[in-house]
Image (cartoon, rainbow, N blue to C red; front, side, top):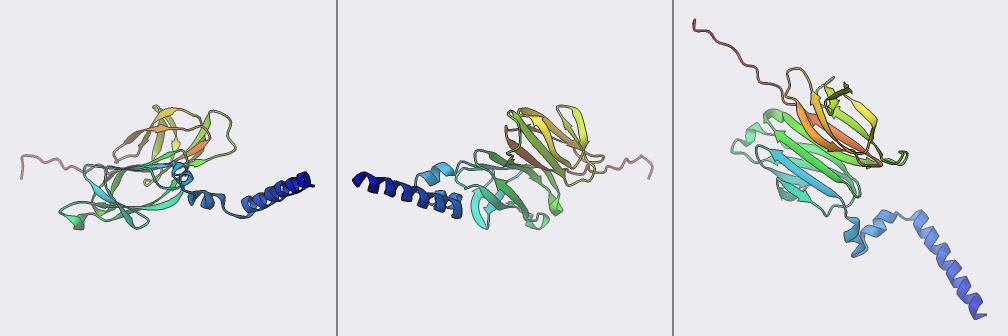
Length: 215
């Protein structure tokens, strides 16, 4: 009789646990468990601004000045705002981006912020893909300049946008270029089982006027 009660309790426990796992958001439960919560926050966000510093806001909360590395955010989509620090604040606007943080990955924002919303650099983040073979990943590239050209390790890929291009998981050098714009060259890492999303921004090349000695 005692063994029967034990078996019955075990069966009921399994049924209750299965129901909880099926109907409740597991991620939300894990996030609230001490210690496990700390292990679950295994995403990294790096924010770098070239030629200057910016104050970083994440979902409206201030996190400090660039360069900044944040390790304690849970996976999910976040709104990132960059407010460039300058004596001429009227020249720079607050830049806002939505970035997805995925477990076991590093998302990166590396930008030069120019006046009037002009940017140069890239935003990189990963999303998990379950339909890829071993040692394969994917790459998507968007650019703020239409029909810019994408190259990997010096080899032409296609004009942007590039959508979910299948690649061997390894490091590459990505180049995005367009006529009359500064070329963007950055190292990228294609991760096994992930899609790397790249949003590229290109600076226009300043126009120079030649002058002659005649007035």
